[in-house]
Image (cartoon, rainbow, N blue to C red; front, top):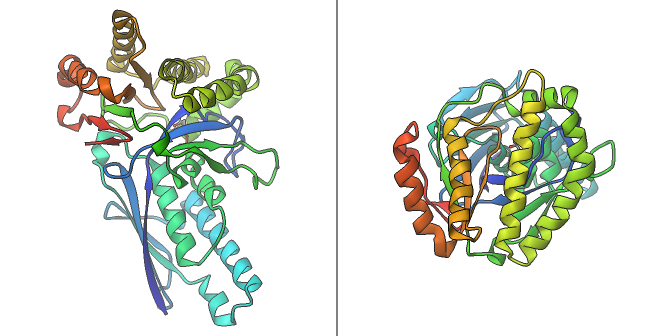
Length: 346
Ligand code: DP6
């Protein structure tokens, strides 16, 4: 028996950042986080999975290149967990033995990003989310699967939904309540747009997984942030989103980004993800907002130098052309510069 399904998932941009785990094995976060997920028209990960009783092992291709499955513990964790859930549910539904054994059938997975990997935006989050959604469909698993995506990559759980998504850290040690929830859909704030400025296509020196672990072990600022900063910020951010208060949103967004990179600086040995162009973009945004006597642009950076700039639709073209004029030639590859419409790039 064979079957094939295709699923896609959006790229998510963290406004309240996830940085630090309370459990490495289950990817449980030290704090809740919140992201804005891009419209899938231009930035998405797409995964096609085939299963057949004739397949002798699980195989995966990323952007056409076959990857190792055996040694990929995160992928193994997702496969194992989804198969466990599938068997459990099949038995519960009183399906015949044939259907139950089908849950163990091997898969061939092909995953692609529809944006250039060279843009340095290749996000494993969208990839894992699409993979888990496809596996869930293939094996007929009902219910929330963000917890399974979380096992692949923490931030991937937020890519299981659209719009503004919160990853609730949860309190259980087995992680069953550490899941993603949609806060509001993208239609809530259609005027909010994002501009992505690719300042370097190079891959980062220290990956997020390793970097955040180093911060957990060495940064006192991280614990302070988790205990005393994030909870109030989460509340203020959700209020700002509900009220569509751009300047409140922008302030929290920029402060969060700055604190993430301050924690990185406080990590020992320090982590540096921003480059000189990133720093110039930060200075530009503050100078521009000051010049306008109004908050018009907000930046955020993840564990890399590329800037995500938020603007309201009515200011998009002015900001985009200014950014392009100032930074276009300074980037590694000006053609990789995306001008974002609402939740998407075009
Ligand atoms: C800076 O989700 O990539 O982008 O759970 O180890 O796979 P793992 O880490 P990952 O970390 C993302 C860190 C971040 C902030 C965020 O997305 O919230």
